[in-house]
Length: 205
Ligand SMILES: Nc1ncnc2c1ncn2[C@@H]1O[C@H](COP(=O)(O)OP(=O)(O)O)[C@@H](O)[C@H]1O
Ligand SMILES: Cc1cn([C@H]2C[C@H](O)[C@@H](COP(=O)(O)O)O2)c(=O)[nH]c1=O
Ligand SMILES: [Zn+2]
Image (cartoon, rainbow, N blue to C red):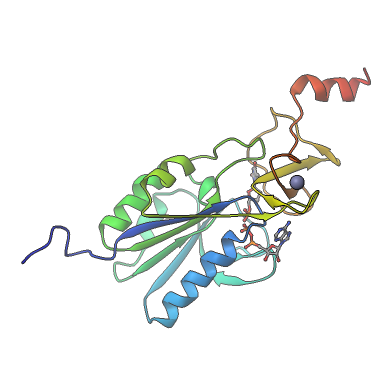
């Protein structure tokens, strides 16, 4: 008997989210490498804005890497994805424009397993970019935690430090960087300066 959607049984969206240093990229690379072992055709993408470590690879903070094509806009992924590709990995998905939701949906509808890794929250602790929409639509969500560098508990948030001080709430959301600007912290140790607090510190009153 014919099942509905039986032509594309494997299409799905998986999201790996969490703070910086929680192991999102490691986990995505682990899944992509296993797909390669299973002789599936794999393609990985990253936003061109992320020039840390290596331009044509996704690289974890502890040095694991996997070949990836940098793309400027979400829709560019559809231009370069091979029809025969089984598994599509997308790292730093929070940086893509809102079109990334339709791109992931379209890939999954065409039978591809789409694995996205990205920050669920920005440095203020607010939802990042298209992440909330992707989390709602995904078949599978895996939230990872780092270790809070202040107290050693599980870290759910990313602390931005500018000149050694917590960043202010009105800082720009996008600031590419790693351990020189960011730390993993738990809810209790995470700090944001209100704009007035920063002004008071800078003005010395
Ligand atoms: N505070 C921390 N908590 C956990 N892992 C950390 C921390 N700082 C550095 N690391 C390293 O970061 C690795 C995870 O890197 P990565 O997969 O790139 O994370 P993400 O993509 O979530 O930023 C860990 O395996 C560990 O070696
Ligand atoms: C919290 C936060 C992070 N970023 C940037 C910093 C890094 O370039 C990436 C996250 O990389 P990772 O693989 O998760 O370590 O995002 C940002 O631009 N804005 C933020 O608020
Ligand atoms: Zn803490």
